[in-house]
Every structure is written in structure tokens, then in C-alpha cells.
Length: 309
Image (cartoon, rainbow, N blue to C red; front, side, top):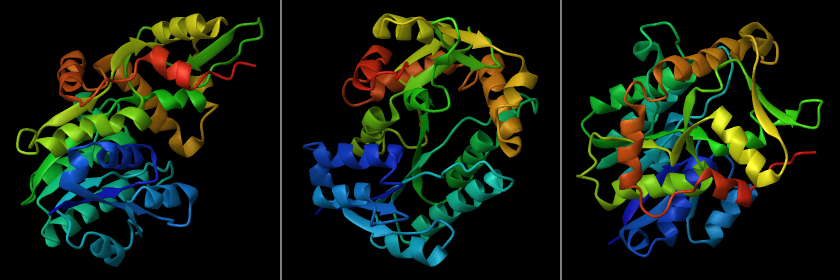
């Protein structure tokens, strides 16, 4: 009999990747029946999952009763919290993450996989608190103290960000620039979150006992933005460069309520490493665990070409 795998955020990037990987994998699709959780079951992504055989259900992470309902009969849970940059960002993520974990325990679930991050505040000695990271790390520590087996998926920087906030923009000289406040040599682990998240989580689903208590530092490669810009130039045939700007100027482009968190995030990664001092070792080990080939930067840019106009 198939075990029920409840996937929160099933119509989003991470949860959608997990759900789609499981239902398309010959072995995991026999072991698990996917129940996808979303806030809006009428959206196109939810209907697409339904057409693929996924049970799609509605829940609000601030509604304890709805969380309880979607976890009925669950064997394994993949959960994540969504960052919203406002004055409640950290408190909200901690509250919602703990609520899902508590409900999973109450429902009798056997295993909990949580989308976490490193605790930037702790690893930097308090210099660079990052609400969107530290909240997830706090929830991870809470889960580790619960009477349920658990493992953790810690995604790197999304390659998809280059279609949004990190997109190269005209520099005025025929070239394009990616601009930020950190050094162009700062190293980032990169993940195609849509195509590759499921490959990491699949490792845990296939061998849950092996990965109990472990963190998968999910990325396919580690590169600086100087290196990324070189790849973009080669793939696009246009000149793309990284441009470091003063922190004060960069803050001016950010919503005031989010500025401290976003600036601290980039400076933390620059000074301490995305996953701390052992970032390379953590990523190298995690790459070896993933199921299937991971997406290179060149492959990502071929699938999703930059819009350089």
C-alpha cells in the first residue's frame, strides 16, 4: 500500500519540484501517493497536478484546522515556509513551520522533511542576522526535538532569480550588469529550484533512515557572480558583467522593511559562506546524494534564455 506523502507548497517551485519528481519516478511513484497542499486549488498549477494524479487539497498555514485536515493519514511530510518581507517575516515563518511540524506529530506521521537554511545570525556571531534564513534554522532545531524522524533540504541560491531581482540590466554602454553590494568574488551555491529540488528530496524519500538528521545542501555548483557573468556572456553572446555598488546605494533599491535582511544575507554569504565555512564540502557531499543529473548553469540558461534587450 502506498504511503501518503503530503507536499506543502505543491504549486510553488520547491514543492512542485518534489511532487513532480515523485509522480514521475518509477520507484517512488509506487511507494508514495502524493497529496499536494496549496492555498488556492483553483489555480492552473493545481489543476495541472490534479490531471497528473495528485490529490490537491487546500490549506492556510495560519489555520490550524486546515493543516490538521490535510495531514490526516500522512506518512511523510515535505514542508516549507514562504518568506514575505514585512515586519512579521521571521515570526510568521517560525510560527507556521512549528505549526506544521506539531500537526504532523499529532497526525502520527513517521517522517518530516523541512526546507531549511543555515542560521546566519549564529554563524556570523550576531553580525549578520537574516530573518528569512534564521527563522527556518530555528524551525529546524525545533523539529529536531520532536518525536518524529526528520531530514532537511537546504536549497542554495535559485538560478531562477536571474529572471527577477538579479536579472542583468542595461549598463548604458551596450553591456549588461548584475549589480549588488557584495564582492564579485563572493561564492554562491546555485540551484535550479524547479528542476532539481525533487532530485535531492528523492534521496531522502528513497532511503529515509539513511538521511535521518542529515541536511542536504542543495546546489549543483558554486560560483561567484563574476564567474556567472562570464557564463552569461558566453551563452548569450552579449557582454554581461558584475558591478559592485556601495551598500548605501544598493539599499535605495530595496523596500525599507526588507533592506536589512537582504543586505545582511549577501554580506553574510560573502564573509562566512552560504552554508558556513564548510560550504564546499557540504555541497560536494549533497551533489553525490541527489537522484539524477543536476542542472549546470549553461544548461539552465539554454532552457531559460536571458532577456537582454
